[in-house]
Length: 492
Ligand code: SF4
Image (cartoon, rainbow, N blue to C red; front, side, top):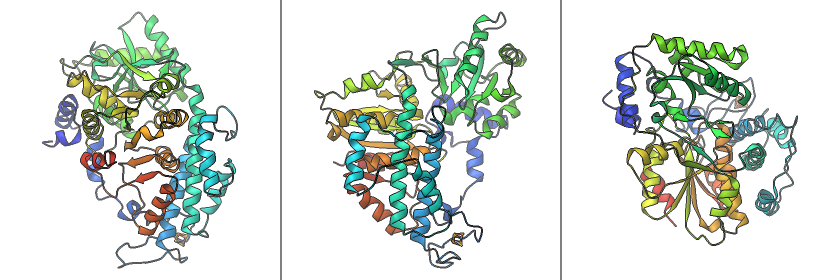
């Protein structure tokens, strides 16, 4: 465990890692190490993504094994098919966020987004987007029959569709700026904490919070473990980033886990190892019983592993509404803006990319805006190092970079956007959105390796199609160092 500093930049997380190791608690870092080396064919996009039962087929990138699939599929189409499959999954994830509004929603962009997408579609000779693109993409993935350029072109259409669904989801965003508090300091009272992962319904959380307020037993409260969850027009305090959630559960500082949809199995497993009660909404638990279970678990503990000297939280971090951001992006402002956001990933030391990149950009005079885990790391870093200058703008997690591009486009300020860096991607939805932002003309970099490097032609044509719209899509076949991204971000 002498490598704790390589796993996370937070000193408290490093202490918790040591403590978990001594107690034999298995965490994601151990599983990540055991999973190495991961499938190199999949990593390069050379494992067939088509819905065919004749396989599985893989293509050897070094020419020592098969050079084609059984049906004759070549590596260019295999890699481009992999991209389309990722984008189809990303689009379906984005669609899922808006399905509660309509059965299959219309793809109707706002006036601002339409102002950007319409010329792009027209310039590329493409017809209007519709939900039919989802079914068409699925049909293209039944068996290989299209050229790789056609597969790439369809991937871009899905990436724009994904942005449209994300924008529609943002209709339920907050109307005004809202504060968020973040960091282990959310647990400074060492009282009963009910941790939340995934996305349980707001009504379910409100019922538990009401019970916490009215309950006459030990004081209890809700904290989020890496999710940005709004309740009663406030963000629930975020005790840790998503990558630290297992660590925090393993510390004994959380006394019950509400496992919403999307909760990783590893989190439930740590709870099992620790004896922490886990509940799901589907079990229809009574709020009083939820709070009682948390209080009972708290009463069995001698102490949590969380140190006493945790820094207090930043209470005054404002998450900007669209309206507020539009003012920042107003015509008078010429400051260069760099977007650095995204989720924790096991491939990177937690917090390293966002903290180092944001600090360096800020020192060089750029305004930095952030969202997701990356924003939490910047908030934590400013507290740990008592920074007063260069605080990042915090954007709504669901639409951070899209919000920015729209605001800058309307203000005719897109040239102020230095670049968009996704420091980590957890879902296909984020990957597809990143591709869409590049296709709209943004300079976009994704730090999570993309499974595209099995075909140089696919990488080249993909870059050309983005550059045709004055965008850039930078991706790696390895986990990049902060300096690699900084050189790109500041290179023009
Ligand atoms: S589509 Fe072709 S390459 Fe893919 S699994 Fe089927 S036979 Fe193999």
